[in-house]
Length: 157
Image 1 (cartoon, one colour):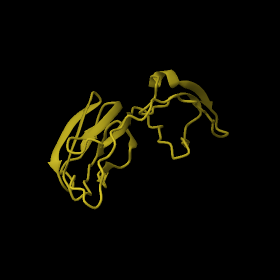
Image 2 (cartoon, helix red, strand yellow; image 1 turned 135 degrees about the vertical axis):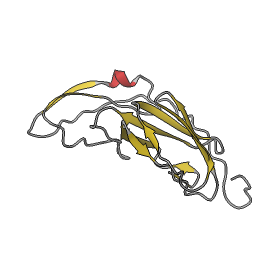
Image 3 (tube, helix red, strand yellow; image 1 turned 90 degrees about the vertical axis):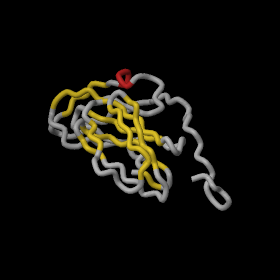
Image 4 (tube, rainbow, N blue to C red; image 1 turned 180 degrees about the vertical axis):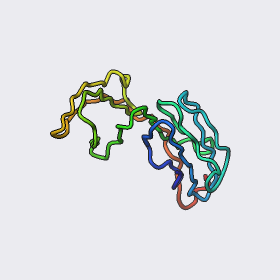
């Protein structure tokens, strides 16, 4: 969704095949697009909610942008596995309901300096409870375009 001329949330994770609507809750039009290999699409300048949701049918990272507001950026992580999550502000996520077995766990972040594959860790889950896995990630600096000023006297919309 677009709200206060930003995408909300900044990162969203979904399972392959998930349809997503892109409601525009702002009082201006947005032109949402992605040129990502996992899903290319374009929602030309619009207000309200487009009639058809976009279906994310291939795994991978989808970067979103707005042709009208250059600072607007967000990501959709499309997972092949039903076991995924997005961390909260504290950088933690709980993957509940995993059947006992061996798994490979990976981390993705939009500013990750290494490949997602390089973060892989093997874990074993038993019926007795969860497993804690931790990473120390190196991140690139945040290169997002600064948002244009808004407020009294600003004519930029």
